[in-house]
Structures are given as structure tokens and as C-alpha cells.
Length: 210
Length: 414
Image 1 (cartoon, helix red, strand yellow):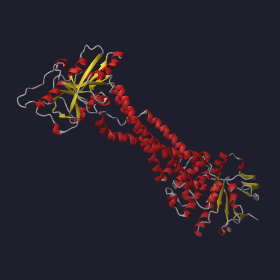
Image 2 (cartoon, chains in turn red, green; image 1 turned 90 degrees about the vertical axis):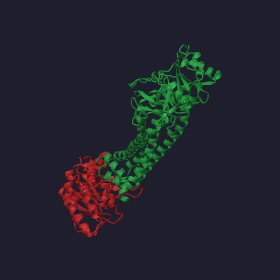
Image 3 (tube, chains in turn red, brown; image 1 turned 180 degrees about the horizontal axis):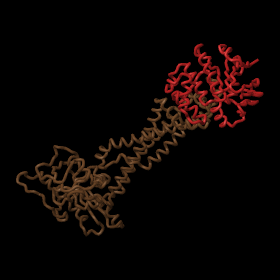
Image 4 (tube, one colour; image 1 turned 135 degrees about the vertical axis):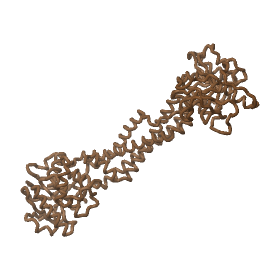
């Protein structure tokens, strides 16, 4: 499902960072670990098509995403990749519902209110559907960000330090939700983290920077 | 949630800076539109009232004043001329003149001017009777449509005139015969809508009466003699003259009058053009001011979009993550600029037309014209196109900036 080969990325004229080849099957879940500066976030951006690698290939399904044209890559990303960041950000002028509709619309799909309601219900956030994103707690914001990442039933879910800003209780909740929701849509889940609390949660772990 | 809705929500999210941009834009647009409206309507009214009058003859003084007074009824007379001097022009056998209409003025009823004249004036302005008939006897009046409407006068109503051009109760000519409304004219869109018309002799009688003994006078309600047969010493204010043809002799007549008589002759077309060129200078200054306001408002749109981009960097990168293309971000910001411009335009147009509606009454009193506040001009359509262009230009740099948002770097920074 997700496969990289000979991936390398250089910032400007600096020495390129080389990444180990990664293989994830459909529905497989795992962690990407490493010290700060080991290139974890860079790798995640390469996998998510947010950056183009200097060398190598990223396969998602049958597509080599770093060979797509820029416009096709944007649409591919919107439809097939859900990304969750350390801090949840939203289009602040929009409500929860509108943010999720925007995610459907920008991916080139038809906004589907009942799908949004269903996802929010599953995350126990049905009552927040018309709330402004500013009114949400940090934990709630991260759960809405998960809702946004899975709304288009992606093949791949990438999470960049999703729990580092959360307390234990919220961390538990977010990790459980990520696992459940990835399973529900049979998506590959890859979490980049240095959060020790997550180490026992996933069998598959890839260590960077060795 | 399409881009237009999103751009609208983004503007509403920052109500203060949106309001500032819109208000500035609206002021500029409103001022320009108001100038268009005033200019257009003034010009139209001035031209409609030219009524093919070739020459105005009156007492010596400012020619512009004579024109304003005799044709537009907005200034005081330059003085009077004697019937003796005016009589040659009233002669139906005059070789150059097809029509000469005498005007006598100086009295009003509740602010509306009473004009002593001959029935020809109705024809001159293409006015038509809507009720009753055209005056024939002294003290009978036929009134313009606006007078009838504003003063609620009906056929058979009577009133006393007062001296001067302003409504003043102390100057009422009471004790003599009252004026009686015998006819009401249909609206003609010309200055006669605002006038009370009667015979020339009525004026003489009203003022002669003042000096007379009040007791034992007989009624003057008779059809007067033709002016040609009246005494030399009687006076009128001015004459409106139409030529038979615009030949060399006719064109020279004005100069002859100015050089060889105690009267002056003024050519309406020349004086009206002079007036417009005077007004134009002020108008150009106002127009320049409006353009400056619009430029400032364009900067305000630019600055507000540009500064909001800084706050929204992450948001824009996020939209890219969700599948948004650079072109969509470009369109989003452009739409915000266009929306600001359209809002400003709509409010500006409402301001100018609303202002016209509000001041129409006062303008009407000062200029003797009916202003219509809700007619829209072709120029206002051009103004809309201009507004859209300015909205686009103000947004284009921020929009390019937005479309170039580097997703990865922006997200890594946060």
C-alpha cells in the first residue's frame, strides 16, 4: 500500500537526508520514531506529498505520488491522504461543519452532510457540529482534526506528533480514536512521534536517525 | 462551502477592517456617483429649459443674472425696462422676430413665483392644460403642476400674492382683488411646473393699487388690452425672444441692443456654457477628491488582505493539505477583494441616491427643478466596472502571495 524506495531529501545545498525504505500494507498501523532533527517531519511531508523528494519514489497504492503533476497531486492528497498535525488548525472563520464540508469540497468531492454527522457522532462530537472551532478544547480540536483526516475515507492517515500537546487522558482518547477510525476505513496509519506514551501501543515501529 | 461563501465568511470574520475598507470605498463611489447625478440632472434641466429661446432682453446688468432670472427663475431681476423700449420687439410685424414673450416678476405666493406674461409662454415650453383653462382676465392664474401639488391648490381657489421672491407674511398685497386659480398645467418637466402664470397687467394693477385709496375701487377682473396698446410708462422685467431664422441680422441684434439702448440682450447658449464652465472647476476638484478617496480605499483593501494573509498562512497551507490547488487560493483572495469592492459600490450608490432623495426638496427650492433620485445612469455602470477593476488590482498581489504558500515550510514553522 505505502512503499518508499531510496528516498532522500536535501534542504538547499545541505547534505541530503537519506531515509530507510518503508513498506506498509493496507490497514497496517505503526510508529515512526526518532530524535528531534532526525528528519521525521520531513519524511512525513514527503509521504504526504507536501514536499517533493530530491531522490527516490513514494508509492501509494499504484500511484507514484512524486511523479504526479502539482494539480493532480493536490487532488490525490485531498482524496487519499488524511494528515493530522501536532496542533489542530482550522479555517477560523468557519464552523466545525463548514470546515469538514470544505475538506470534502477541496478534495473535489460533493459535500455530504450526513457523512459529516456520522463521523462526528462516532467521535462523540455530534453536539459540536455548529460550534466555532475557537470554542473547542484542545482535546476536542484534535478529535475534530481526526474527523477531518478521515472524512474522505483516505487510504493513508499520517499523524505528526498528534499527542504531544495533550494530557494523558486526551492522549488515550486520541490514540484509540486514530486506531479505530483507521480500521473503520481500512486505512494505513503512520504516526510520527517521540511521545514515550505511545511506544507500547503499536507493534510496528520504525526508528530514524541510526 | 464554495470559495465565494468562504471568502464572504473570511470578510465577516474581520468586521472592523472589512467595514473600514467598505466605508472608504463607498465614500469614493458615492461622491463620484453624486457628481454624475447632479451634473447630469442639472445639465438636462438647463437644456430642457433653453426652450429654443434665442435672446433674452432686459435691464442692463449681468447677462448671466438676466438668463438665470428670466429663463430659470433662480435669481433676482436686473431691473425693469419700459414698455416703450420693449414695444418694437413685441410688434408682430418685426422682420426678424417670430415670437417675443414679455415677463413681469417680483411677487410670489408661498415661495412660488408669479409671472405676468402672455399665453405664448405655455406654447414656448410645450406645456399643456390638464384642468381648467389658460388665464385670460387679470387676476386669473394658471399654475404649474408642481405648484398645484405642493400648495394643494385646486380650480377656484383664491389667494393674495406677496412682494418679493420669498414667502413673507408681512409683505402680502391684501385688500385688492385676490388671484383665482382657473387652470392647472400638466407636468412638462420645465420651469413652468414651478410658476404661477397670469397677465402682465395684473402686476401693474397689484402695485398701482398699493398707492391708490383703498376705498371704493372697482374690480379689475377684465380681459386686458393687448400690450401694444398700453401706456409707454408701464414696465416689464424682460423679454424672451425667438428669431425667425438665425441670419446675420438676427445675430447682430443682440449687439445692437447692447450698444444702442438702455437695455441688454443676452444669448442663453453662451451664458449657460459660461455657467457650466464655472461649475466644472469646482466639480473637477470634487472629482479629484473622490478619486483620491478611492485610491486610499484601494490601499486599505490591499493592506487588509495582505495583513490577513500573515494571520492566515497556516489556514491556507491547510487548505492545500486538504486538496486545494494554488489557483483556488488565488481565486479565494481575489474574490475577497471583489466582494469588498462590490459592497463598497452598492453602499456608495445607495448613499448618493439616498442623499439625492433626502435633499431633493431643498434642491428643488433652490433651483426650481424636479430632481429624480432613483434614475440610474449609464455612468454608474462604468463606475461598477471601475470598482471591480480596483478590487481586483488591490487583491492581486496578496492573491499571488496566497497561491505561492509553501505548504511544508508553513506547517513546519507552526
